[in-house]
Image (tube, rainbow, N blue to C red):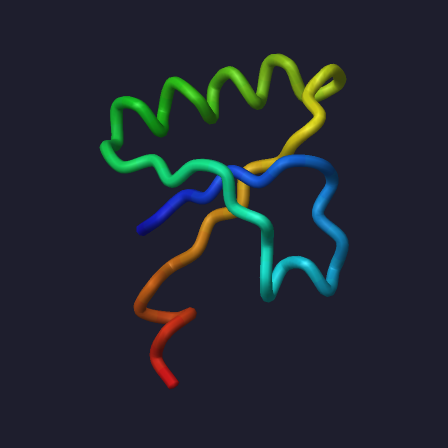
Length: 59
C-alpha cells in the first residue's frame, strides 16, 4: 500500500491525477501522520489519499 499526500483539497477529477508532494513508506511513519491528520482535520489544508497499487495499476 502506498500513501500519497497532496496539497490542497482534492477535487473528484484530481483523484486520478493528484499533484503529489510526498510519498511515505513505512507503517510507523504512516500511522503517526494519519493520527496527526485525524486530530487536526479542521485546520489541515491537505488530505491523505490511499492507493492500493495492485488495484490502481492492474490494467
